[in-house]
Every structure is written in C-alpha cells, then in structure tokens.
Image (tube, rainbow, N blue to C red; front, side):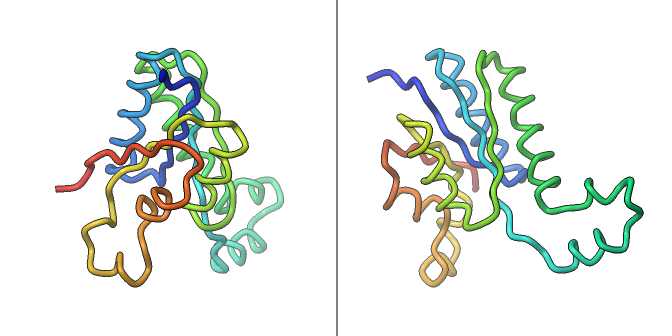
Length: 148
C-alpha cells in the first residue's frame, strides 16, 4: 500500500525536526500530501504578556503564533526536500490527541512521530506522544528513532 496522506507532529525540537525530515522524504518519494501538526498548551504568562503589549503587536504574542512558526519551519523543510503538497494544522491541547484527530480528519495513511520520550522513566507515568499515538491511531504509525 502506498502512503498518499502523511501526518507528522513537531514541537520545533531537533528530534521532531528529524521526524519531519523523515516524513518529508517519505512524502516526496511517494507523492503524498504531508500535513504538519503542532499542538500547544496555552501559558498564562504568555496571555498576561499579550494583554500588556501594544495593540499593534498583540496578535503576534501567543502560544498559537509560536506553534504556527514551528509548523511553518517544518513546512519549509518539507518543501526543500521536495514535497509538492504540504499543509499545517495547529491546535491547543494534548499533542497525541491532536495528531490522532488530524489523522482521522484528513484520512491519513500513516502518522510519523519521533521517538523522544519513549526511553525516559516518566513514560510509564505520563506516557509519551509516540506511545499514545501508537495505541490509538486510526492508521499506520512510523516511529522514527530520533534520540540516542
């Protein structure tokens, strides 16, 4: 089965960038559409700073703006690798849930995530994004080895 719709998650970290690069190469090789997903949790400090900022720059101070910047950088990387069709989605909430919801909405064939968090002791208590995605995804999951 060829992958036609690929979803990849990024938080802008080096390990997530490796997952994006891998997903982009896969999308370029198969002619698939790549959807870059970035989740974020609103920070009360950011909201306070936004409220105190001048009106003309207030729109730029938000957690969603930061997420959109991260998604934009991932889209640029994908374009450089040769992906013809790249989309992005940003949303507030649990990153794993956002990836799963996006994959369901776009009819993804595969979700690509990095392996960050899978080896840490807290993965048993908090879980990791790759672990949550692998257990609840509506499609294939490709976990890219991104950590040493």
